[in-house]
Length: 117
Length: 108
Figure 1 (cartoon, rainbow over the protein chains, first blue to last red):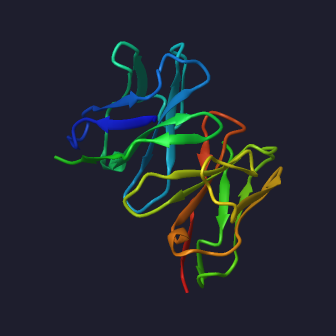
Figure 2: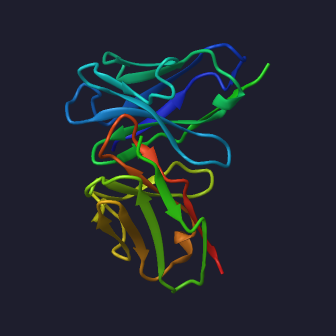
Figure 3: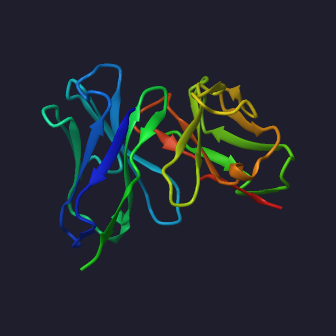
């Protein structure tokens, strides 16, 4: 059974860095054919794709966030992580990690991150 | 960036009725269209990929159609558990993958 779960601080100060980790079970992040994505959803709003990482370490980011985002892989812990720098209140959202194959077929439950002083 | 536009924003339907949701892409995405269902407090659930292929475990009352720029999701006979928000997403041209703004299906 594939499962994903996000973890990290729920509160980040403006201009700080948002850091989240996704722990994956039931499948290796080192396995080809899968992309490992981060997405977000501001409260009461729609979904936004942030970016993904492939098992090889290749990444792809949304152009609107590319200057502030990085995604990395830790195969020894079967995890992948998100860093988003210089955050503002506009970055307050539920952050989801997900596996991307033909679509995002497995999702974590989501982690609410609030940007506030 | 490809813009995805869903209509209507809200669809009020009686249980047992048929519902048709629309999704339009700003340029052709061939058949590279995904539909998700999201219930309050939950992560989205993959329903349909490649415009018309049901994901594992999705009931046959859900069907997808379309290609190019125009797509539909049809729920043939709405059940109580189908009242939710539905999103379309293109996975043809990246970056980035883009989503529609969602259609809320609520009880009439």
